[in-house]
Each structure stands twice: as structure tokens, then as C-alpha cells.
Amino acid sequence: MRHRGMTIGLLAATVALLLFPSLAHAQGLMPIHRFYNSRSGVHFYTANEGEKQAVQTQLASTYRYEGVAYSIDSSDAVNSTPLHRFYNFRSGVYFYTANEGEKQAVQTQLASTYRYEGVAYSVSATPTPYPVFRFMNVRNGVHFYTACQSERDAVVADLLSPLQYEGIAFYIAGSVPVAPPIPAPTPVWQRFKGLKIEGVQTSNKVIAMDFDDGPSNYKTITEIFEKYGGKPTFFWVGNRVTTSAGQYAAAHGLEVDSHSWSHSSLSTMSDSEKLSQIDQADARITQLVGKKPLWFRAPYNDASSSLLSLLASRQHLYADQYLMTRDYTGLSSSQLIQMFDTPKPGAIYLFHEGTSNTVAALPTILTNLKKKGYRVVTNTELLRYGTPTSF
Ligand SMILES: [Zn+2]
Image (cartoon, rainbow, N blue to C red; front, side):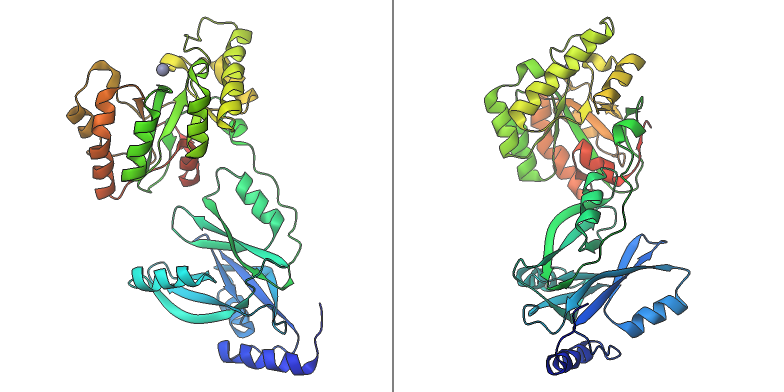
């Protein structure tokens, strides 16, 4: 710990006392304590020593003390940007932002949920020396903050974590603790090896919509999603992927997964032929889209146990579906629209990219889903909402 001169320290302590009446710090470093509520899965932060002790003595059965999240150099002029605190009185959770635009947006647009509580403490606006990273729990909308790079990296690498990385929340001058080693999560392709995933177990109103057999109508479909909200998931056939399709997918941040190299039936192939179908498609999509696919769906959904093992060895998940719309059989748009009258939370719905009635039905399907409170996310985003399953 660094110690500052008394004059500056006293000034900082006076400012801190105004914010947190029971905080009495003569030192320059003000620790921000972190607790974890194991019942709600939510973190709680406080700079108030009295509040920290009250939580430790009176709420120990609910709140586990996790240590100092980071320390603010309260006697340093670099920490001069106010960090605003809001209280969400629906979830009982605090939200912090140092972004004035975001603060004003919350005050004007979310005033019925978020009550502004004032300045928690001051942070730095300049990127020095420590960033504080922000995540959002997609299941309950609650934010999580950490100043530990290793913890950030571990959460980002965990595809099953409900915490979605949102970027740097603010910067601090002070000190950052070294996080304890965080065990790497079991890779999803190992954990769900052999499972034909039809969706995830969740009560959140969220589904995935997959489009097989492209690339063909991907631009029109992407434009519809960009207009009406949500994200499609494309399963492209490797030998059909062009440079321009790959560039479009990369520019629009599309999730492109694999539907084999040549759309041949895999069940009669040898293992080496199956691997060739997987590897050639991976190579083409990785080269042209810029990202290796996580998911694989076999043509004709023709997945044997040997194929599932080979896919796990190539770090893929197997995409099945909760509902095959059979949109390629000449169904009308209104028949397709009716399939979403009672959506299934966490389910994967399968369409085909080249079907004109699907494209025609999409605006109404997406509009109706939004009215019911549903969001359409990609297959990979769906993993954050619950455990992969076959229904
Ligand atoms: Zn197909």
C-alpha cells in the first residue's frame, strides 16, 4: 500500500465521509469490498467499512465475503470522474456507471426501475493505470464488475457463463488485487460430447433460429433481423461459401456454423471421410468468415455416434433442433407464423436459408415474438441462458 501526505489524505477522507458517513480512511487507498450472494447469484460492492462489517456479522448466511475488488487511490487527483450509483428496486441490485450519457439515459428512460443514489466514489476517465471490466448477466440483467484481468479472461472463456462481457466500465488509479488462480471450465465440446442439442434449459424468453444450406438469402435475412431485432444463426455448406459471403458475415458479426463440406449424407462415409467433411468446411469458413464454427449440423440431421465423437475431437457442438419447421416442403408463410404462437423458451428452431416463404414470414414471426417478450439469440449466445439439452 502507498501512503500519502496527511493534508491530501484528510481532504480525501472528508470527501469520502460525505459519501459514506461511517467511512474513516486516513490512508490514500480506499478498498472496495466485494460480496457474493449465493442465493441470487449477484455480487454486492461497498466502500463503506461499517456496511461491510454489518453484512459480515448480520448477513453472513447469505453474503460470502470475497475480498477487496480493487482499491481506489482517494488522495490522487487522477480519480476525479464521478462513479454514479443506481438502485434497481425491482431486483434489489446496484448498478454503477461513470458514463454521463449512460447515466442520463438510465435517468430518463429507466426511471421507473432505477433510482439514482448519487456518486459512489470517484474514478479515472483516462486509461491509466487499471481498467474495471463490466459484464451483464443475461438471465437477470444484473451487472458484475471486476478489475482482475485473469478473472475477466476466465469468465470470457466460459461459454456457459451467464455473464456477457460488455467492455471497460471505467478506470481507477489505486491498486488491483491479484486474483487467485481460476480453474478453467470444462470445454463445452467435452462436456456435451455425444449430445444432440435441441436448445437449453431456461425460463428466460429466448430462442435461437437456425438457417441451413446457405449461403444464399443471408443478406435479406440479416437485414430483416437488423430491422426487427434479434440475431440469426447460419449453417453454411463449406463448398458454397464465397469470399463475398464471408466478408459480409464478418462485417455484420454473423454467427456462421458448419453444415459439412458438400451436403452429402455422412452415415455411409468412413471416419476419415467424415473428418474430411468437417475439416474442409472448418478451414473454408475460418478463412473467409474469420472465425472457426463452434456448432455443426449434419446434412439430413444424419448424426451417428461416431460422427458425434469425431465432432468433439474437433471441438464442435452438435446442433439438433427442437422444431424442424419443414419450411422447404411448400408450407405457406401463415403456417410458419403459427408455429410461433406458443414459443418454447431456450429452443432451437430450424429453417432453410433459400426458402422464399420463410423470408416472407420472418418479419411477422419476429414482430410476434417481440410482443410476447421473446428475444432471438444465436446458438452460442443461447448457452449463456442454461444447460444444453434435448427436450
Ligand atoms: Zn441441409
